[in-house]
Length: 199
Image (tube, rainbow, N blue to C red; front, side):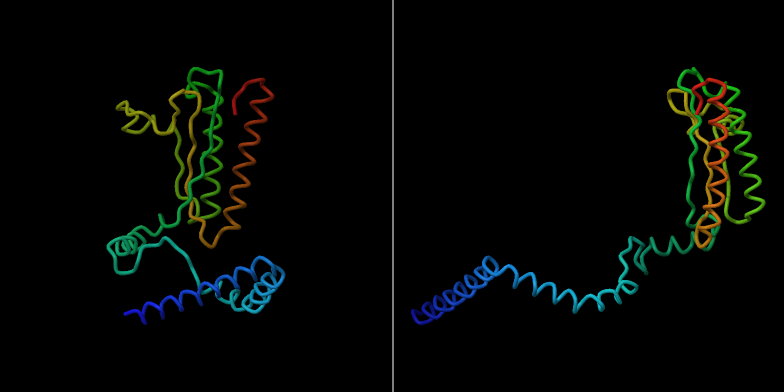
C-alpha cells in the first residue's frame, strides 16, 4: 500500500514539473509559442479551406423526424410558399388622426398595387401576393370589425406587405425591389412637395 502511494506521489511530482516547465515556456518564450501556432495555422490552412464546402451548420430538421416529414410535405404540396420573403412598406402620417382616411394613403396604396401587378406580370413566379390595410377593410374579417394587422394602434401608420420567393432569382428580385423603392421615393417626394409629414 505504501509503495503504491509513493509511486502515485512520484507520478504527481513529475506531472507538476512538466506543467511548470510548460508554463515557463508560455510565459518566457512567447515568440516561440506564437511561431508554433503560426506555423501550424499555415500548414492546416489549405486543408481547412477545403472543408468549407463540406462542413455545414444548419438548423434544418433532422431526417427521419416528424418535423422533417412535415417540411417535405409542405414543400411538395405548397411549392410556391417555400423560401418566401416578406417586404414591408410603412405609410405614415404623424399629424393625422387616422392614416386610413388620408387621400395620400389611398394614392400610395393604389400606386404600390399597380407596381406589384406590373412586376408580377413581367416576373412570373416571383411575386406571389401583396396586401394592405385598405384591402383588409374590404375583406370579411374587416367588415366584421376584426382589428387590422396592417394598422398601428396609433392609427398613424399602416403597412403595405408583399411576399416573394427569392431562391436562385436573387438578381431579378433585386431589380424588382429597386423599382418598388423608386416608387416609394417618388411618393415621399410628392408628400414633401405638398408640405405634409406623410412618409
